[in-house]
Image (cartoon, rainbow, N blue to C red; front, side, top):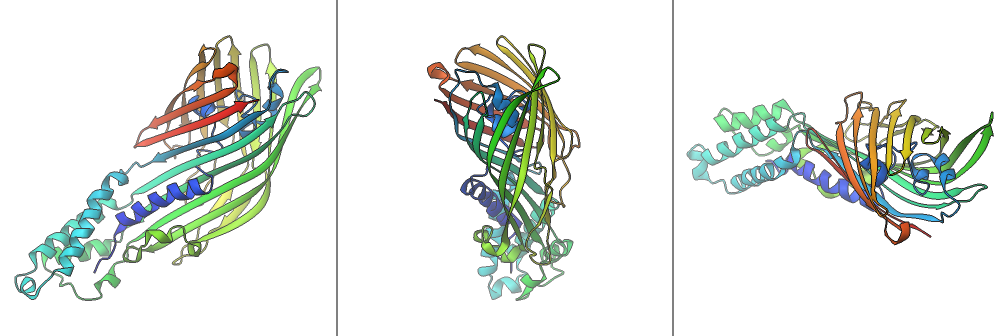
Length: 416
């Protein structure tokens, strides 16, 4: 009757999320992850170090000092998940309910039918309750990873970068007819018959987009009306993988989530730009434009459903104040972040600070808010270690917000 149910889809999608992001070097809120910046509310347009500037604002590569050497990020990896409906907590319960219903059906005897099949009624009622509890549930996840090599110099600093970011949107589409049917079996008004599984219409939909950038960044400082202004540019190739797994619940097979049957890919060209300038001795202003070439990519049409992933220009302005052991910074998105057309836009503001407690240890904290209210606002914090005279940088960051939102970033970098 019922072979699989929505929770098994959720479990499969959760497994696929991790495997998809990791296997594609793509585990991020936004289009980049940097542990130092993410610990400071995700603000890095004006505050990034020269070695991670290629991720947030390539113009900041000109901030390298004469004694600074080649910087290698190997790698930066992060993930943030919002499970506001606590679907993860429900997985074990609903899985046990599915197993119980299937076991009851397989062991059903003629004597059970004569006695009114009380165990099957109880199992069907339990399943109906679980389905009802899953109506409208969803899980959202963003992840990112990056590798970068930055070569500073006084003439034309440059960097090679591979960064990837992914978003996954999972939702349950529970049919009221399914609940009505199961409640009918539970209260005895409906007699279950062979083939009844064809009456179940509930589906699960998992959308995933994995975008990988391969770019070379360049920066140069110019004199503009007697004022030093740095500009950076990152031409890049983009590879986009889209997944659309939509299926009836009793046909679900988690191994299909990564199947090429539900995936298509696109390749294109795009461009990031940035500028930065000092205002006085301690204040830096930065401005970036990511993905200046707008693109729309359609998923495959599965079970009559198709969605469109949107890549749009994202402009962000930032300020950073740096003096002594302190850095205070803030970023404001001037345009919204778009994802699939079926999802609402986001637009972020982030603020944060760093205190260099020791020459080899830094403490950071911040706050990041979505002014459109689509994503959860999060508090951020982190710590950095830079031993061996700043030749090694190990940074970690974490975030926490309402509705069961958690995230983390780990980054390892070397200066030669």
